[in-house]
Length: 218
Image (cartoon, rainbow, N blue to C red; front, top):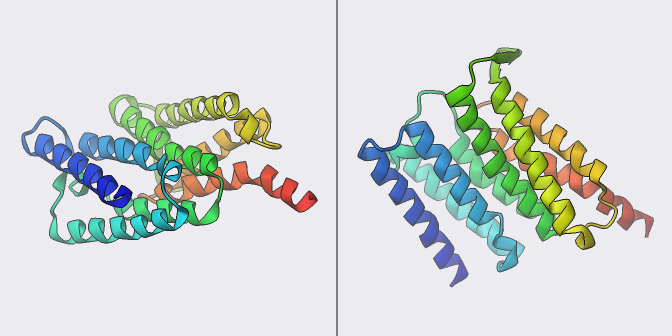
């Protein structure tokens, strides 16, 4: 039942964004990022009522669904953007990998929230107000977009540190600060949607280090 209801909710969000996009009330990039944020925020809390195996299976189902939509052009709101990107395909891959690389629900949640909220806000800020840019190789990024990612990341990490302190053995505030800078750096160098995989992996790596160290020490 949880799987069915979760897929239905995601489908409803996709249909709603498609409806408003086709009626001209949402630009493709705005519709795409809105889905990015809403769906990712919902998925971030799946470990609260789903097993890791279920999340992994759902990530495969989502990948197949997105791939079919991509090939057939079913949901234009998330596929028809001017820039070259495969972010919608990497999105479920990042979720599946995150569910495979951690057994800590709170780490999964923070990792996916970085991918959804921090990355989504950074993209929107960069598109609307990113008039100053910097280059990494041939890749151009918005300074305001990267700053927005860093600020949102700090907010997520501080919230986790304050609220989940009892569940964070060995994870100090310094670790969270490092996590924010690492995730921001990864976002700035990622291209063509790969940030949907690399950002959660970077967060899992950074936050999982103290836990791994404690486990080895025991």
